[in-house]
Length: 187
Ligand code: CTP
Ligand code: MG
Image (tube, rainbow, N blue to C red; front, side, top):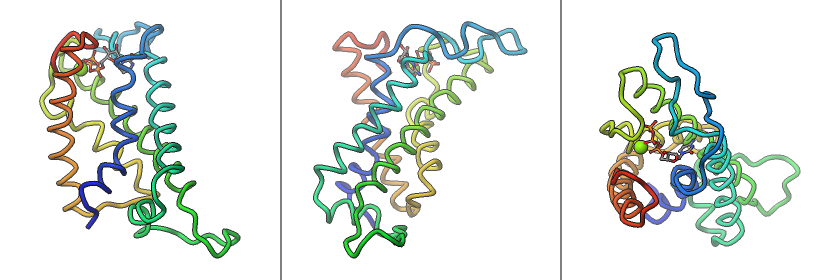
């Protein structure tokens, strides 16, 4: 089983993707203000194109930084289980590109999960910013882990640790972001 440090390095791109739109989002809405068949907004004002691309880019860039700065053993530890030795890679396996691919998939899953959460909230009539217990804290994680399956399949024990860690970190960072004035609500 991966340790806490390995799990945190693994999931960091998803955290960066999830949190960067709060600071850098804005502008055109993903749904361009349009409503779904039920008359309510598709995603609502909290989901913008700039936020979407910011999250995708920031999460992937975080992966590039980690890939080029983390020790070989750490990347190998995270990826080894599912690592496919591709012909033409030479005798030294290199985990940089697989880790960057993983970071992109985690970031993409995070942003899709975030949109899916907002879509579900709008369908049940929740206004943007209202808290949807568990969906807000863990929805992005579930989607990120599903999108990462082509590169890394975690064990149930590892997923459980990430669920608990992510819940605690999500609550703590949102209170912090609210105190800093970056977010209107502390969740
Ligand atoms: N944000 C954005 N684009 C995204 C995601 C987030 O611009 N794709 C920004 C918005 O300013 C948003 C803030 O980050 O208000 C916080 O994100 P989040 O909590 O996910 O959105 P909410 O405003 O709470 O809306 P919802 O209820 O739909 O989750
Ligand atoms: Mg919210």
